[in-house]
Length: 385
Image (cartoon, rainbow, N blue to C red; front, side, top):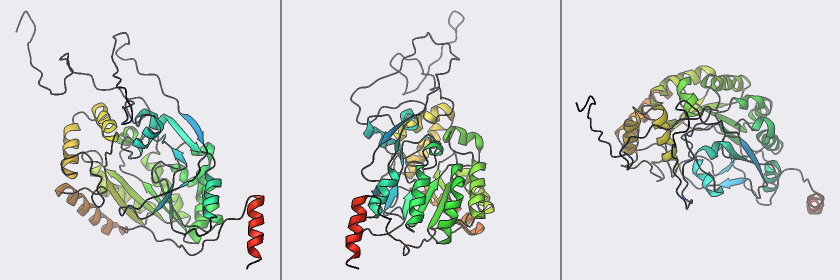
């Protein structure tokens, strides 16, 4: 005791230069990222400073979602990754309002000069000509048919799809051309398109995977704040399965000490709702995602932060991210093996196939020509049979 005050020592390597511990960041209601983190192409460093004028309980003003328009030259993106079962994908939107704090696509916003943090979920881009661009690509001579995945990076059924309806337009074109397609989503809006999906399903041309990493609504509200609630996603599975659409459940991602305790519960609930298949991925933290996720832990799970990050380092060979093919989706080590065993046992118990649903690639027919020049070319080609 010194003049009525208790003297104590704070030992923390993360203390700022002035020696005072920093308060945890204040999350914004309805947003996943806590801050706009600095992206890897940014030349300037900006640090927020509390000048003492704001009231302690004063919350930051809500951020509005902005949507810009892009005219895409190509809509199909290609990949040669051995870790995923498709080599082409469509993402009709850049950024995602669902705000999933763990989203591995967040770093792509840096290419636009925007932050992978709050910008990723508030500054969106709609590829307004997505349907026309796909029609052109499917109509090219020599196009080789294989499954197109919609929603591999950003969710095709995020809230702005209600107004833009780009995903529905893409499905209409894929039905017209008898082209196989798979969908991955956290959006309950997928049930809106059950009419198109049912027609595609009759021809074995579609599989839908609904992503449910947790059934805990409180965790989901902070982890993926503007995605459909877990029970709504189960309702979507039930609606699609009832219409004959093959549905799988994606446990993506499994997060140590946050969602891993729900593996068996999610698979049981998904099976009861009508799911046929299941797969999982382990949390990945590429580039700026590690900063977004670390800030989120500070705001929502400060007591678990050290355990979560240390476990991720064990899974990733001592680092927070491992981009190597073969291990990046599942991790390695004892903890990764334990999750794989739990998932496999639950899949067998509930009769959920640990593989993707097979689709028919032999029904494709090129899209109808839409321009005068295309019609003229088609007529000329018809002369040659």
